[in-house]
Image (cartoon, rainbow over all chains, first blue to last red; front, side, top):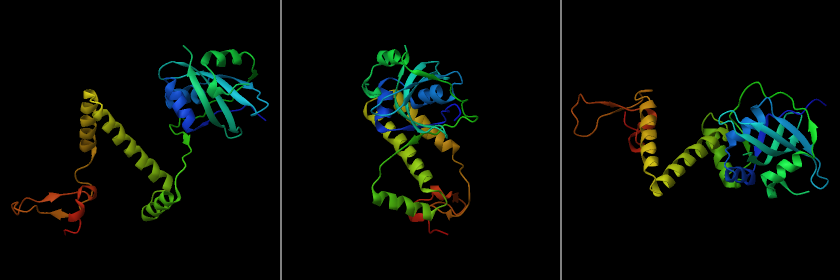
Length: 89
Length: 139
């Protein structure tokens, strides 16, 4: 299996409201998690809920560093579910 | 292990140090502005959406997106007006003006309407969307 790609983000009600409460927009998160070519990621093992990806990237529009948790949905097609995201001040 | 939803940014940054680094693939070649949002919807509304799709040439999801977008725009503008946001009122007026200017006055001439009392030479052309419903039958 090759390196995982992040192409599509799936949003839930909870993630949308969490991210908005953290002062981020959907676009900010997408810029940092999908489009930033220099983003970094680490796998976090959770024996109860499975693996999740922790990603750090920068939004292009307002140059904000963002950290987020993504659950794999279809890693081959690059589909991930957003759990939450924060700006790193 | 705590759920991300219950964590703070500081905890997330601490957990970062314990993760297993992974090399990510390149970003997509094209920058799409679309995301995926799951929405539960009642069966009757979904049936109505399917009916609308059969009447036109748009798929149900495109119709739903269009209706949602326009509804959200109106809802936002109404709540801003109600909150007394003067800037929002001006922006809303400008937005309406922009939409009015961008709408072609004559797109397809499919009706000629003579307003009551107007001189015979005064004929107005309406586009399909501008024809009031009760005048659509006027030839």
